[in-house]
Length: 383
Image 1 (cartoon, rainbow, N blue to C red):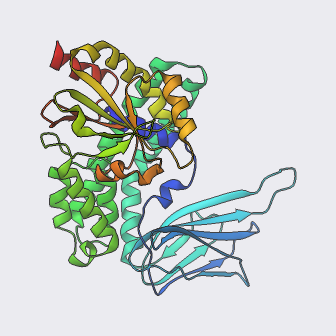
Image 2 (cartoon, rainbow, N blue to C red; image 1 turned 135 degrees about the horizontal axis):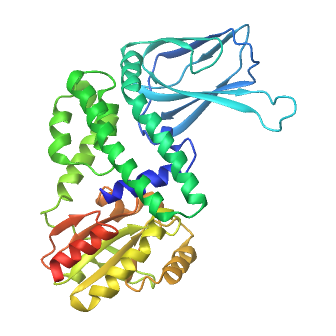
Image 3 (cartoon, rainbow, N blue to C red; image 1 turned 45 degrees about the vertical axis):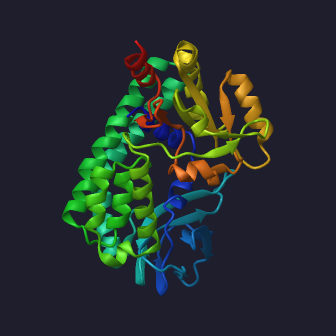
């Protein structure tokens, strides 16, 4: 899908640890991560990143007598990240780091660190064992992904848009292939694994296909379904049912740029593209010219756009500036609550740009149509 390209590009262009934090799963009581270090390189500090009560948490530890210990407060099998900071080397100005994702659960996880964290020996419970199996399945796709990203950045430097578009298509295909050959394969073979929920979240992605995901969710262990993360995924599946193609779009009301309330119901009788975006979202701004082109072409033929912005509190001027700069001459609404935007939560929006094309009767007839796909869909309707 076109939307996947923008989501992947957003990940490429945001080189942070947010991917780890975004797992959004709480962590476990009674967990001990104990490491023994015989590494030649001196270690300055070791950090552990995880999710505690729905919020990002960070613990730190030093190596004492060749040992470091973490006791994260987690209550179910959870993704964590271990990160090592090495001292600044002679002739350099910045410290170096190593990082590795682990899957922690109640009990003791032992880490034997010799030359590098990548090659460290890790002994944990079933969660870590299954996670390592999943990681091995995914490695060939990760290697291809890194290669494509490297190529993309080179093409981006010279503004070779045709080659960039080709890489986007390859990334799109790679994402779909890895979901089927890695996560679906794992779920079919180990539906009761403590890592199954994590695998299902990766398979589901931000835009859940209910027909595919719901049967897999049903196979999860009862305790997993009753966990906080399990209930959260179930809620997302139910929202996906309510926003699927063919169902009636849920009504909503938010204030426009003049602080006047605007409802989706106000557009009944028109084809309307409900477009979720934000001034801070690079892929959204890159897509805006395509939306402008479609709007100008079909605005006299019973078509319009309703922009829903996920701009941040206190950023109304940035929102307004982006509207004017990008020439977005349609109706815009927002509560300026960032990812807590009420309409975004109602529609299960977890990545932008996203959109819903709604017919004159208020029914969703397409989702996440962008670029040429948007033009083709509107041409199918009007031409």
